[in-house]
Length: 289
Image (tube, rainbow, N blue to C red; front, side):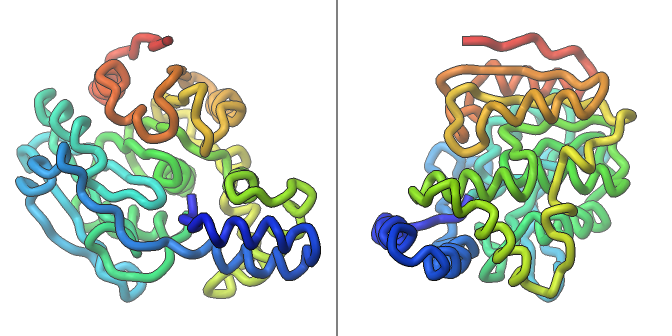
């Protein structure tokens, strides 16, 4: 989710009341602002520092990659979300290594130690494909937030993996816009106008953005064993989207939690255990709080 400083949110709310067209244009500019890269948390630093690092080129940007574990072992790709970085998966990295798997992750464009100034789900998809070509193949992909959305869309496009875990995914472009407007305090009445403006001015003259960034219209293939994880108290990826994603992928599983929110779900031991169980082909237990 785009980073918007409090004074900017206050200004957008005021503009929405007196000059909606200007508010939409200003909000669209704020929508692309990534802000300073997230720092590596102290709890994640040990995992971060013992990784084997590399880099791939993604449309002229240097995307930093990380690998852990035995290169000969089946590997899992981890895809982080907005305003995050690869190290945020540290607890899961440890657990996957302990299960005998190799692990690969990367800092998305304009995130972590990678270069760039902005990132969309489409650019995250391009990074996933580039990392797959350089570090794959992968037996499974685990994505969080925007990373889960981008990973799911890339699987729909044919990325060859056996298993997928989606943690706190948004359903698509419109869901991202809805959450953004809600979090900055702009009225829902401006949703359609905002979406049209962002789509019309999307970087790179990309066409049909709303149709392309839609995990319900382009679901994960049935042949990919899929687990959706969603917390009931997530304020960014609203819980109502998870059952829709689950229903769009016949045979998929839905694991629900409570009280963990959007990010802490990645640190929960029971969730980590369920993710590892899924990617190692065991059936995950339902986790409820």
